[in-house]
Image (cartoon, rainbow, N blue to C red; front, side, top):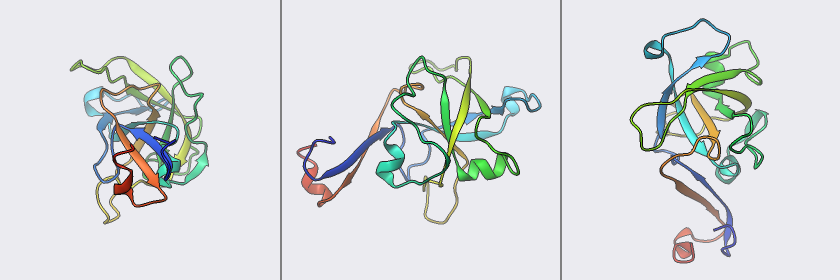
Length: 168
């Protein structure tokens, strides 16, 4: 898709802007009081490729974004949105902290073991559901490290988007 004339960038994710987060996941911040899984706070959870933030024009405000080195077998990393940072890491630096979130196993109704996702960056809030300013705390993980059974493509174009549909 990136090679199609008129395309400035393309990225994939399992949820689109304004369509909410694809998943809501209970989490625990490592090193804090243990909370039973059934009673944990929840956050939005998206699997995205490394270009997602750039293509959508979402600013990285602290740390780094996701990269091509964040693959299966590498340490699991996550980027959180500003709402998540403000709500759960007030007066703390979230970079380097770990979120314990159970693995999503495609095709199975139950969750797998907890994954210690290391927070490597904070992004500006993505508009996930409305224009009224309401933003849910959210976590973004690399698609390579947290596969999803479905994917959406976002495209930034330099031309009328409908003119690209056949080529894409």
